[in-house]
Image 1 (tube, helix red, strand yellow):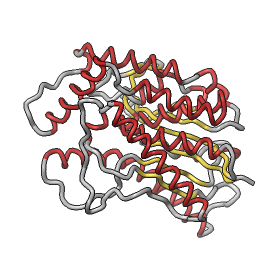
Image 2 (cartoon, helix red, strand yellow):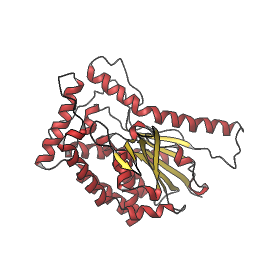
Image 3 (spheres, helix red, strand yellow):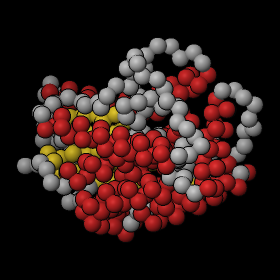
Image 4 (cartoon, one colour):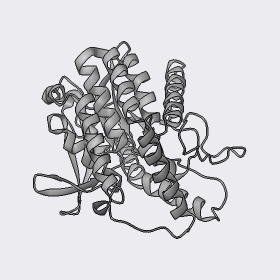
Length: 346
C-alpha cells in the first residue's frame, strides 16, 4: 500500500520561488513512487504555487505540473523595462523604510501601481491556474487542496478548499495589506493568509479517511532558528518577521506532535486517528524581509534552483530510509551571511 502524503507550503512572497522548485521536483516523483499525494495546502505564494502545480498535474500529469510552475514563475518575474524599474522601486523603498530613512507611508488604495499589480497577478493566475480542473478535487480520490486567508471583517482564519479555490481566493491569500487592497469574497474582505495559518495544516488532517496523510511534508520558507542577537534595524525587522511567519506553523505542528504522542500512549483510538510523520524541506539561506518583494529574474531563478536542489536532497534522504524531519542545509551556519540581492534586476 502506498504511503499517503500531504504537502504544506509556507508563504513568503518571492521566496516561494523556492517552493515552486520543490514542487516541480516532488510532484513528478510522487506520480511514480510508493507515496500517494493526498493533500496540498498553502498560503500566499505557497498557495499560488500549490494551486498551479496541482492544476497542471490534473491537466497533464507530472509534465503538466512542471510546465505550469515554470510558466507561472516566468510570468511573475520582472523581465520588462517597466517591471524591472517598479520592482527595484518597491524593494529599495521597503529597504529604506526598514533602515529608518524618512519614507512616506501610503495606503495601497492611493497608489496607482497597486491596481496594476493586482491586475497583472490576476491575469497570470487566470492563465496558469485551471479552476475548472480544480473543481474535480471534490472527488475524494483526488488530492485535497487548501488555501489560507484571513477574513478581516469576522476577524478569523478562513480557508478555501478544493472546488472552492478560485482566482479570487488565491488573490486574497496573497493580499499583503500594505501592498494590495483587500479582496472581497461573499461580502467579506480578505487579506493575506500570512496573518492566519501559514500554511494550513489541520485541514489536511481533518478530512476524508481516503485523504488522511501518514506523512506531512512542510516546505518552510522562514528560518526556524538564528544565531546571535539582532542589533541593527534591518536584522531586527528580518527576525521579527521570520518569527511572526512561523508562529502559526509551529503551533499547528505542535498539535500534530501532541496527537502522535497521545496515539503512541494509547490515549486515542487508532481506528479514528492516524500517526502523521512530519518532515521539513527548508530554505537553506537567510534572506532579508524586503527581498520577499524582489521579482528580479535572476533572484527567482536562483531560488527555484535551490528548491530543486533541496527537493532532490530530500528525496535522496527518503531513499536512504531517514525517518526524521529533513532540513536542507542550515539556516544558522556561522559562516553564512544574510544576503541582500541586487534589486536592480539581472
